[in-house]
Amino acid sequence: MLETITQALGDVGDFVYRNWRDGLTILILWVVVYQGYRFFHATPGARILTGLIAAWIVLTLLSEILELTLVSWVLKSVSVFLAVAMVVIFQPELRRAVTELGSYRLFSSFNEGAKEATEKLAEIVQLLSNKRIGALIAIQRGMDLKSLHETGVELDCRMSEAIIHTIFYPSTALHDGGMVLRLRDERILAAGCVFPLNQREFSDRSIGLRHRAAMGVTEESDAIAIVVSEETGTISLAFNGNLERHLKAEALRERLNELLFDGDSDFDSDDEEGDDGESEVTG
Image (cartoon, rainbow, N blue to C red; front, side, top):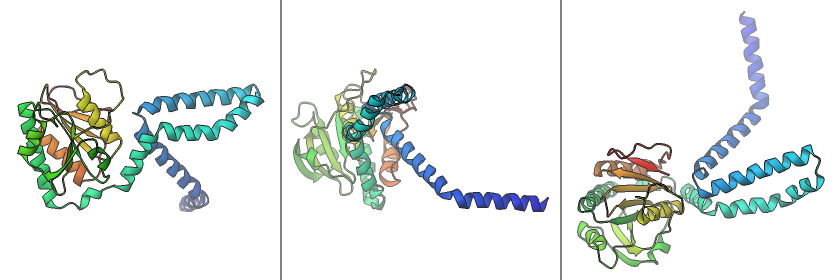
Protein backbone atom coordinates (compact mmCIF):
# COMPACT_ATOMS: atom_id res chain seq x y z
CA MET A 1 0.00 0.00 0.00
CA LEU A 2 2.75 2.44 0.98
CA GLU A 3 4.66 1.55 -2.16
CA THR A 4 1.56 2.28 -4.28
CA ILE A 5 1.07 5.69 -2.66
CA THR A 6 4.76 6.51 -3.12
CA GLN A 7 4.54 5.52 -6.78
CA ALA A 8 1.42 7.65 -7.28
CA LEU A 9 3.05 10.69 -5.65
CA GLY A 10 6.12 10.16 -7.80
CA ASP A 11 3.96 10.06 -10.94
CA VAL A 12 2.18 13.25 -9.90
CA GLY A 13 5.48 14.98 -9.18
CA ASP A 14 6.88 13.85 -12.52
CA PHE A 15 3.75 15.10 -14.33
CA VAL A 16 3.98 18.51 -12.61
CA TYR A 17 7.69 18.76 -13.42
CA ARG A 18 7.07 18.01 -17.11
CA ASN A 19 4.02 20.27 -17.50
CA TRP A 20 4.50 23.18 -15.07
CA ARG A 21 5.12 25.59 -17.96
CA ASP A 22 1.75 24.70 -19.50
CA GLY A 23 0.06 25.27 -16.15
CA LEU A 24 1.78 28.63 -15.74
CA THR A 25 0.74 29.63 -19.27
CA ILE A 26 -2.89 28.76 -18.56
CA LEU A 27 -2.78 30.73 -15.29
CA ILE A 28 -1.33 33.83 -16.98
CA LEU A 29 -3.88 33.70 -19.80
CA TRP A 30 -6.72 33.26 -17.31
CA VAL A 31 -5.58 36.30 -15.29
CA VAL A 32 -5.28 38.42 -18.45
CA VAL A 33 -8.72 37.39 -19.72
CA TYR A 34 -10.36 37.88 -16.32
CA GLN A 35 -8.82 41.31 -15.77
CA GLY A 36 -9.77 42.30 -19.31
CA TYR A 37 -13.35 41.24 -18.64
CA ARG A 38 -13.45 43.28 -15.42
CA PHE A 39 -12.26 46.39 -17.24
CA PHE A 40 -14.39 46.14 -20.38
CA HIS A 41 -17.58 44.20 -19.61
CA ALA A 42 -19.62 47.28 -18.55
CA THR A 43 -18.36 49.64 -21.25
CA PRO A 44 -20.13 50.66 -24.50
CA GLY A 45 -17.29 49.10 -26.51
CA ALA A 46 -18.03 45.69 -24.97
CA ARG A 47 -21.10 45.31 -27.18
CA ILE A 48 -19.06 46.10 -30.27
CA LEU A 49 -16.38 43.61 -29.23
CA THR A 50 -18.98 40.90 -28.59
CA GLY A 51 -20.55 41.47 -31.98
CA LEU A 52 -17.21 41.40 -33.80
CA ILE A 53 -16.08 38.22 -32.04
CA ALA A 54 -19.41 36.50 -32.76
CA ALA A 55 -19.25 37.49 -36.44
CA TRP A 56 -15.61 36.37 -36.65
CA ILE A 57 -16.38 32.95 -35.15
CA VAL A 58 -19.40 32.37 -37.40
CA LEU A 59 -17.54 33.36 -40.57
CA THR A 60 -14.51 31.27 -39.59
CA LEU A 61 -16.66 28.17 -38.96
CA LEU A 62 -18.54 28.65 -42.22
CA SER A 63 -15.35 29.10 -44.20
CA GLU A 64 -13.88 25.91 -42.69
CA ILE A 65 -17.02 23.77 -42.99
CA LEU A 66 -17.98 24.92 -46.49
CA GLU A 67 -14.35 25.30 -47.61
CA LEU A 68 -14.82 28.92 -48.61
CA THR A 69 -11.22 29.68 -49.50
CA LEU A 70 -11.78 33.32 -50.40
CA VAL A 71 -13.64 34.08 -47.14
CA SER A 72 -10.88 32.38 -45.16
CA TRP A 73 -8.24 34.47 -46.95
CA VAL A 74 -10.17 37.70 -46.29
CA LEU A 75 -10.50 36.89 -42.58
CA LYS A 76 -6.77 36.29 -42.25
CA SER A 77 -5.99 39.46 -44.22
CA VAL A 78 -8.13 41.77 -42.09
CA SER A 79 -7.00 40.33 -38.74
CA VAL A 80 -4.29 43.00 -38.41
CA PHE A 81 -6.77 45.79 -39.13
CA LEU A 82 -9.19 44.26 -36.61
CA ALA A 83 -6.51 44.44 -33.91
CA VAL A 84 -5.97 48.14 -34.67
CA ALA A 85 -9.74 48.69 -34.57
CA MET A 86 -9.87 47.14 -31.10
CA VAL A 87 -7.26 49.60 -29.87
CA VAL A 88 -9.29 52.50 -31.25
CA ILE A 89 -12.60 51.24 -29.83
CA PHE A 90 -11.19 50.63 -26.36
CA GLN A 91 -8.86 53.64 -26.28
CA PRO A 92 -10.49 55.23 -23.18
CA GLU A 93 -10.49 51.93 -21.28
CA LEU A 94 -6.90 51.13 -22.23
CA ARG A 95 -5.77 54.60 -21.17
CA ARG A 96 -7.48 54.19 -17.81
CA ALA A 97 -5.96 50.74 -17.31
CA VAL A 98 -2.44 52.00 -18.01
CA THR A 99 -3.02 55.01 -15.76
CA GLU A 100 -4.12 52.80 -12.86
CA LEU A 101 -1.16 50.50 -13.39
CA GLY A 102 1.25 53.43 -13.23
CA SER A 103 -0.32 55.01 -10.15
CA TYR A 104 -1.25 51.91 -8.16
CA ARG A 105 -1.24 52.53 -4.41
CA LEU A 106 0.42 55.90 -4.88
CA PHE A 107 -1.71 57.29 -2.08
CA SER A 108 -0.59 54.62 0.40
CA SER A 109 2.32 56.83 1.45
CA PHE A 110 0.09 59.76 2.44
CA ASN A 111 0.48 61.10 5.92
CA GLU A 112 -2.06 61.66 8.66
CA GLY A 113 -2.65 65.20 7.38
CA ALA A 114 -4.21 63.79 4.22
CA LYS A 115 -6.54 61.63 6.31
CA GLU A 116 -7.59 64.68 8.29
CA ALA A 117 -8.28 66.46 5.00
CA THR A 118 -10.51 63.53 4.00
CA GLU A 119 -12.49 63.91 7.22
CA LYS A 120 -12.81 67.62 6.59
CA LEU A 121 -13.98 67.11 3.01
CA ALA A 122 -16.64 64.59 4.09
CA GLU A 123 -18.02 67.11 6.58
CA ILE A 124 -18.11 69.88 3.96
CA VAL A 125 -19.92 67.61 1.48
CA GLN A 126 -22.48 66.70 4.14
CA LEU A 127 -23.13 70.41 4.78
CA LEU A 128 -23.67 70.98 1.05
CA SER A 129 -26.03 68.01 1.04
CA ASN A 130 -28.03 69.38 3.99
CA LYS A 131 -28.48 72.70 2.18
CA ARG A 132 -29.12 70.97 -1.18
CA ILE A 133 -26.34 72.83 -2.90
CA GLY A 134 -25.29 70.91 -6.00
CA ALA A 135 -21.59 70.12 -6.27
CA LEU A 136 -19.14 68.15 -8.41
CA ILE A 137 -15.65 67.53 -6.98
CA ALA A 138 -12.85 65.52 -8.60
CA ILE A 139 -10.09 64.38 -6.24
CA GLN A 140 -6.76 64.21 -8.05
CA ARG A 141 -4.70 61.10 -7.34
CA GLY A 142 -1.71 59.83 -9.32
CA MET A 143 -2.71 61.22 -12.71
CA ASP A 144 -2.33 64.97 -13.24
CA LEU A 145 -5.59 66.68 -14.25
CA LYS A 146 -3.98 69.75 -15.77
CA SER A 147 -6.06 69.38 -18.94
CA LEU A 148 -9.21 69.83 -16.85
CA HIS A 149 -7.84 72.95 -15.13
CA GLU A 150 -7.62 74.62 -18.52
CA THR A 151 -11.36 74.20 -19.09
CA GLY A 152 -12.18 76.21 -15.97
CA VAL A 153 -10.56 78.77 -13.68
CA GLU A 154 -7.29 77.89 -11.94
CA LEU A 155 -7.41 78.82 -8.24
CA ASP A 156 -4.68 76.98 -6.29
CA CYS A 157 -6.09 77.99 -2.92
CA ARG A 158 -6.49 76.35 0.48
CA MET A 159 -9.50 74.05 0.84
CA SER A 160 -12.10 75.45 3.23
CA GLU A 161 -15.83 75.18 3.85
CA ALA A 162 -16.38 78.85 3.00
CA ILE A 163 -14.62 78.68 -0.37
CA ILE A 164 -16.30 75.44 -1.48
CA HIS A 165 -19.69 76.76 -0.34
CA THR A 166 -19.12 79.99 -2.27
CA ILE A 167 -18.00 78.20 -5.44
CA PHE A 168 -21.05 75.93 -5.62
CA TYR A 169 -23.64 78.38 -4.30
CA PRO A 170 -26.39 78.80 -6.94
CA SER A 171 -26.01 81.69 -9.40
CA THR A 172 -22.28 82.15 -8.78
CA ALA A 173 -20.00 82.16 -11.81
CA LEU A 174 -18.39 78.76 -11.11
CA HIS A 175 -21.24 76.75 -9.59
CA ASP A 176 -22.15 74.85 -12.77
CA GLY A 177 -18.70 73.34 -13.39
CA GLY A 178 -16.59 70.82 -11.56
CA MET A 179 -13.88 71.41 -8.97
CA VAL A 180 -10.46 69.73 -8.99
CA LEU A 181 -9.09 69.07 -5.51
CA ARG A 182 -5.72 67.75 -4.29
CA LEU A 183 -6.10 66.31 -0.82
CA ARG A 184 -2.49 65.72 0.17
CA ASP A 185 -1.95 69.45 0.68
CA GLU A 186 -5.63 70.51 0.82
CA ARG A 187 -5.47 72.60 -2.36
CA ILE A 188 -8.37 73.54 -4.61
CA LEU A 189 -6.61 73.54 -7.97
CA ALA A 190 -9.42 74.74 -10.24
CA ALA A 191 -13.19 75.29 -10.41
CA GLY A 192 -15.79 75.73 -13.11
CA CYS A 193 -14.14 72.91 -15.07
CA VAL A 194 -15.82 70.92 -17.83
CA PHE A 195 -15.58 67.18 -17.21
CA PRO A 196 -16.08 64.55 -19.95
CA LEU A 197 -19.55 62.98 -19.85
CA ASN A 198 -20.26 59.29 -19.52
CA GLN A 199 -22.21 58.06 -22.57
CA ARG A 200 -24.00 55.04 -21.11
CA GLU A 201 -27.79 54.77 -21.23
CA PHE A 202 -29.59 54.72 -17.86
CA SER A 203 -33.27 54.08 -17.16
CA ASP A 204 -32.95 56.08 -13.93
CA ARG A 205 -33.71 59.70 -14.85
CA SER A 206 -32.28 60.95 -11.55
CA ILE A 207 -28.79 60.41 -12.97
CA GLY A 208 -28.14 63.90 -14.35
CA LEU A 209 -25.27 65.71 -16.01
CA ARG A 210 -23.26 66.05 -12.78
CA HIS A 211 -23.41 62.28 -12.24
CA ARG A 212 -22.46 61.59 -15.85
CA ALA A 213 -19.57 64.04 -15.58
CA ALA A 214 -18.38 62.32 -12.39
CA MET A 215 -18.46 58.93 -14.09
CA GLY A 216 -16.82 60.36 -17.20
CA VAL A 217 -13.83 61.93 -15.44
CA THR A 218 -13.20 58.72 -13.48
CA GLU A 219 -13.36 56.68 -16.68
CA GLU A 220 -10.62 58.74 -18.30
CA SER A 221 -8.41 59.16 -15.22
CA ASP A 222 -7.72 57.60 -11.83
CA ALA A 223 -9.55 60.42 -10.05
CA ILE A 224 -12.33 59.98 -7.51
CA ALA A 225 -15.42 62.18 -8.00
CA ILE A 226 -18.02 63.30 -5.46
CA VAL A 227 -21.46 64.54 -6.50
CA VAL A 228 -24.11 66.33 -4.46
CA SER A 229 -27.53 66.44 -6.10
CA GLU A 230 -29.09 69.90 -6.18
CA GLU A 231 -32.62 68.45 -6.31
CA THR A 232 -32.42 65.86 -3.53
CA GLY A 233 -29.15 66.55 -1.68
CA THR A 234 -28.09 62.94 -2.32
CA ILE A 235 -24.34 62.28 -2.07
CA SER A 236 -22.75 60.03 -4.70
CA LEU A 237 -19.20 58.86 -5.30
CA ALA A 238 -17.73 57.79 -8.67
CA PHE A 239 -14.64 55.67 -9.25
CA ASN A 240 -13.48 53.69 -12.29
CA GLY A 241 -16.54 54.88 -14.21
CA ASN A 242 -18.99 53.44 -11.68
CA LEU A 243 -21.30 55.40 -9.40
CA GLU A 244 -22.16 54.66 -5.78
CA ARG A 245 -25.19 56.64 -4.64
CA HIS A 246 -27.16 57.51 -1.50
CA LEU A 247 -24.13 57.87 0.77
CA LYS A 248 -24.15 59.46 4.20
CA ALA A 249 -21.17 61.39 5.54
CA GLU A 250 -19.82 58.40 7.47
CA ALA A 251 -20.14 56.07 4.47
CA LEU A 252 -18.47 58.67 2.24
CA ARG A 253 -15.60 59.01 4.72
CA GLU A 254 -15.12 55.23 4.82
CA ARG A 255 -15.17 54.88 1.02
CA LEU A 256 -12.64 57.69 0.58
CA ASN A 257 -10.33 56.14 3.15
CA GLU A 258 -10.60 52.75 1.41
CA LEU A 259 -9.89 54.17 -2.04
CA LEU A 260 -7.15 56.61 -1.05
CA PHE A 261 -5.28 54.80 1.69
CA ASP A 262 -6.14 51.08 1.51
CA GLY A 263 -5.46 50.57 -2.21
CA ASP A 264 -7.92 50.53 -5.10
CA SER A 265 -11.16 48.72 -4.42
CA ASP A 266 -13.55 48.37 -7.34
CA PHE A 267 -17.27 48.78 -7.24
CA ASP A 268 -19.27 45.68 -8.04
CA SER A 269 -21.74 46.93 -10.61
CA ASP A 270 -24.03 43.93 -9.99
CA ASP A 271 -24.74 44.88 -6.35
CA GLU A 272 -27.67 47.20 -5.88
CA GLU A 273 -29.62 47.83 -2.70
CA GLY A 274 -32.14 50.40 -3.85
CA ASP A 275 -33.44 53.59 -2.30
CA ASP A 276 -33.91 52.53 1.33
CA GLY A 277 -31.10 54.75 2.55
CA GLU A 278 -28.33 52.27 1.79
CA SER A 279 -25.74 52.78 -0.91
CA GLU A 280 -26.64 51.86 -4.48
CA VAL A 281 -24.09 51.12 -7.18
CA THR A 282 -24.60 52.05 -10.82
CA GLY A 283 -22.16 50.85 -13.41
